[in-house]
Length: 324
Image 1 (cartoon, helix red, strand yellow):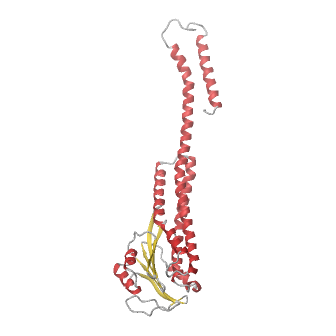
Image 2: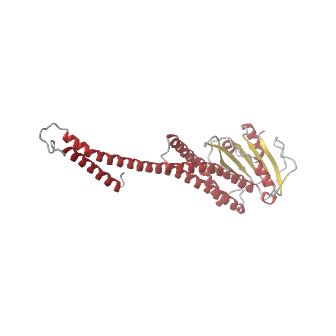
Image 3: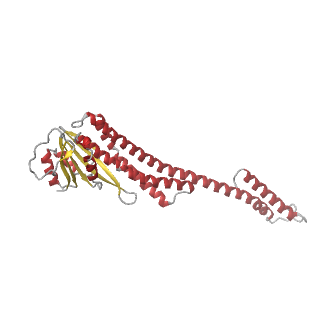
């Protein structure tokens, strides 16, 4: 069986021997005792054994084995079923998602991880080192697991934040290359999916922090409010990054339009300057015998002087108004 760890805890201390889940009947936990079982990618047969051991609802077990669930919380009698989504950087800037299902009872907590690379071993050891907190019961462990999952979002956001800031700084200097534009749209798609997959975690934490639920002690709500705060911060940072990506494209487009406007004004100014000699040369290139100054001794220098004076005047004018 894919059991990572299984222990019974009494007064915040683990039992000397691991909890056996081979179908053997165990004495029910006492008031200050609870069982904590962690599974990773179990089979349907293994989950059926766990269902029998802890009297889990078949619908909840079915959802726990479905890796495409969105975060949610459901009540089955005196048990809670919670689904949380994990996230981690897969390759490059691609976000890979997993799922952790939590079955929470008065005297037990069962976690089922599917596709999640972050094990709970370190978390379990940290909680076992703080017996005063662990003796509060399985609802405190559920809070610690959800907090562990939400904290796993932060390294993803920090890495992507660095990438977004780099692209933002480069977009100020020059218009993004086609490869950068494709990267921006890939990141925006990642953020949209992140919001769609992780976003319902906020609703789950709100219910745990502010609603009367079975097996959740009222004194434990303050811990879930802390997880809710972390979730909201992660979502706010993600939305900020998504807005920044949008502003990068808009800012780069505005800067490019400004640069194109400068080039257009320069071309228009030079075209206006060149129009003067073109017009005069075009007039004197016509085949007429009687034209002003055509046979005058200083006609040619006078026309050239007129051309240079007109072009120089236009050049100074365009320089003054900032077109050149």
